[in-house]
Amino acid sequence: MMSQTRRACFAFFLLIVASPSLLIAAEKRPAAILVRDALTAPGQPATVEAKLISKRLMLIAALGGEPLELVVDGKVVATALTGGDGRAFFAYTPKAQGLAPVHVRIGNSPRVDQAEGQANLAVWEKRQPILVIELSSLIEEPLPSRIPSIGIAPESERKPMAEVADELGKLTQFYYRVIYVVTLPVGGDGFQKSAEARDWLKRHKLPTGYILALPADTNALGAKIDELHASGWKTIKTGVGRSKAFAEAFLQRRLDAIMVPEPTKGEVLRKAKVAKDWKDVRKKL
Image (cartoon, rainbow, N blue to C red; front, side, top):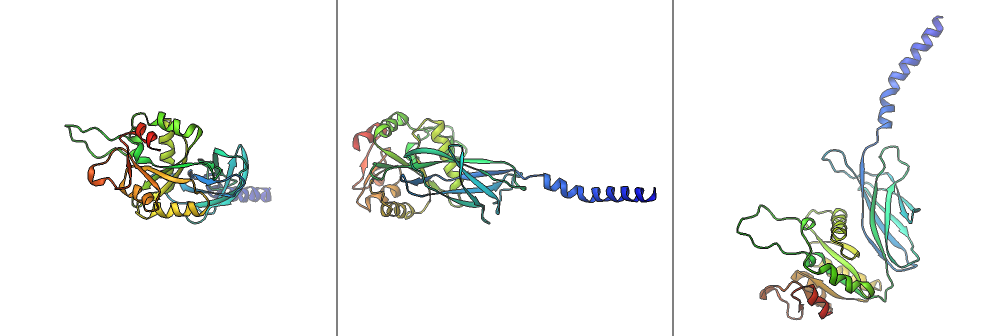
């Protein structure tokens, strides 16, 4: 009888000791997955980059050592572990051309709750014409008001210029593929900025394209153009943008640049074409 009592007490003691660890093991931390767009040609390998971050309260921290899965057409096509910076890289070789959504999700993790992120994989033939567009050139300028505004609305909250969706639709329906360039503010996150740009384009029913987030560096776009040309994307010949720096990156490489909307006289570059709106852009291509 005493032996049974001791065994029962010992089992109860073990349960008490083990309970906190069981609760901790059962509690998974919430997380979010951000994914960058990727570009490749049919039959050529693509690198899809994802980032895993925690979502606990206001704290945003990278989560390393977690398994992620790349899902295409409902099938897991690659797996990877996140590094100390929360990033993971997947190698995948698509066969069919087009612009397809890819998903990244949490694998079998005892520590992180289920989460999923999405981006676009652009699989284009290298002979297809590509138009590079500065995202800010699509956005409508706020009308002047007698009442001073408090701050400036972020790009994600502003509307596209008139007729942009219609004109871009005509350009991309049968001919052009599109690369959208978004500029990162100092300290900005390229993953987050890319996600915001995708959401903005979708919300305003603009053509889907490959989103390229670049730092606010006057040389960043030019270096990327050189990199793409060296990789065989020779059909990148024209850029349509709002800023002087964007247009200069193309003109310096003897490529065409169209500035829209029409800038002030001091901002017009000598060899750049100028369009008053997006209907005018289509006429100048």
